[in-house]
Length: 114
Length: 185
Image 1 (tube, chains in turn green, cyan):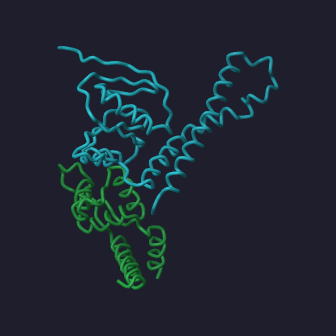
Image 2 (tube, rainbow over the protein chains, first blue to last red):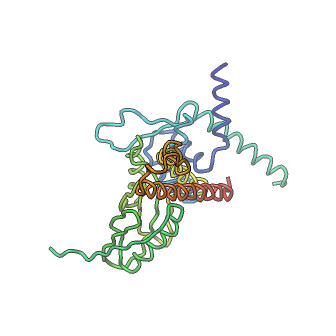
Image 3 (tube, rainbow over the protein chains, first blue to last red):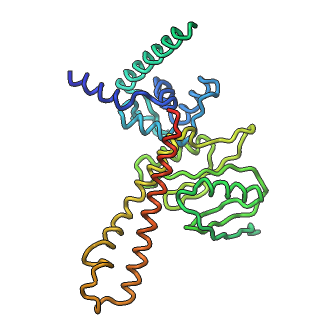
């Protein structure tokens, strides 16, 4: 029950995610370092979503402070780049956002008769 | 060994005028003068080939725990860190295929930079407290005869600095508000 409440608190703070934060969060379903996230998001969106390093750094530290992503320990001895990955709470927030987008799209289609 | 030709320029640019500073650096690069290092209001350029170079300034505390992660992200994405002056990071990049690269893609993200800058100004607050400390205050001259002229001049200078500090904070706050009100999200 308290866990449920905590999650509601997190959701209230984090949602709605910005476009950049949403893409970064879902890209981290598998562990990646910062630049890896940038490449994956650009590839996935066919270049539409550009993440400058300032935007990326800011979004990564926000997502981390909300507990939606975390640094991966033991990234290998000679790896100087920090690896990030989505947390359990991060996955829940992402799923919540996806449902919200679906609903928004459905309502739009309904009203525009598409 | 041939020394490369350099030039020094004294120029007064303030923290809230960073976009103006970026344009100025880009203009000099186009004339073949490339930034080498920066001291307060004092810039050193080295002579080279005239080039289209994009300069961007970012504010980040070098003592932050995640500083290495921060610099790695910029480096990996192709931005060269030219120099650091008091937490101000001077980055440059050569634009590829006609696109102008940005370090911030939205106004909201950019506003975060100025929020960090405001936080960076907090350590200067003790100066404020000293100037307005009743025991030292400009406005409390109980023992007027004993205050030396030098002390008064120092206090006056401090007072001017404080006024300037307040002005700077207001300018930065206005900048944050403008960026956030222009934010689409």
